[in-house]
Length: 591
Ligand code: PEP
Ligand code: MG
Image (cartoon, helix red, strand yellow):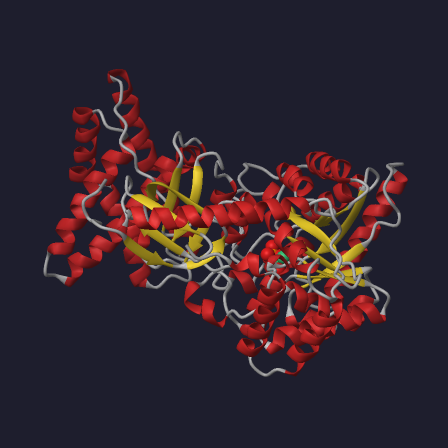
């Protein structure tokens, strides 16, 4: 255990995925690099030096390429930075030192490079000279680039092939990295940054591992080898927990185990209120591997299949046939229950490594989701055809993300019609009546929901985005997490408008954002008239527990009250009061 944290120390962040775990910490370094020293066999020393030189060459090519691409728009000071990077890359003293470490210590190149450049950075930072201190920042940047090249594939493998259970601690974890975590070895994770509805947090819930985000600079304070307890109910990380703390958490585990039994008893039961009102409870999934959890938690099908995870972490795009295989497998496993496949939602915080989408200033406001698909019709059409073909095999429905108005919806529907015509001409079967829906996750869509309702069969409210776009609060930014309020009156009113517009047109409406998995908010959504809730499989049980204990009349009163309220906290408090009174055992979270 490292010596810097002595007794028990508590760090606080945002609780994003329930549960408690404890174990050894592995810290992923700030630039996502997990540098682990490996001892090389003698005959691997020369190839390792070659690998290092190759990484330098690749880095040089990348920098020159960036320079070339931005040459016209680059100011001379930016150009100087790249020139400085290139010069540093050629610094023989640094290179020789790295080679010496590889050769004499038989150490792997990433470790050697990291060690040598850290030493340089420390020297530069210690000098009382602004110019040299700036060079330290340059070298840090450059180091990160070289390490990216050295670790690119291997670092992902390291995370996937951990060989002992651990708690990951990092500055940030991208959704694509999180999607690859091996659940058997990652007990839980903590990050410095992030928000409750970032896709990284969503993935933690879908993996059903405890997680805390927004824990400020915890990745700098902890060290690999520290022992910690992670409390995903309350958003705390306790390093070196005392016996008393461990005892208290032992008591909490007993309470949770007895709640778990009660929840398991209702897994096969319907989600119906005490006064007989049913709501459809379905699950959110990222790929076919989530299907057993959907079945185990008794969800009534899939309300959101986030297909973009089929597109990231791979070298090329999945073909129509590859997609078909996955969609068909999910549809067949859950038939006759519905599976709502959402068309590709790349962009925002989810990127494909294959599609070189340029970095944007505001990715959540940029080239994302349906905007990307309408601009890349070949990618879109391959997916539409795969979904349509899968509809012949089960109860498949489809929805479009990020619809902002009628125009986009009409364009997307026109692509579907063309794909249908092609399939008919090719004699390929599909469900002619496959239901198509639109996600309502942009305020403009909620405001024109009456027009959209005429062109679809259902709406699914993407509250994660609807909240961030309505309140202008980035869902991934812990600094504005306090502004990201699901019970803001504006959100409640937009949901009500959407429900009213859907029902007036004979359509149904679901909610598939993270609020659908919060038992505190379930009565409010029910009372607002929502017909379906779709949440992470692990959240289904508690939502159902709440629904089965509440009366629809109480839910409606709550919604009517909320629609009159002027403050988010007033609405939240009334939701919480009803929830605690209805199902007190769901709220025993304190150790
Ligand atoms: C949402 O925005 O609420 C949603 C369900 O979509 P995603 O979280 O994938 O953006
Ligand atoms: Mg969304």
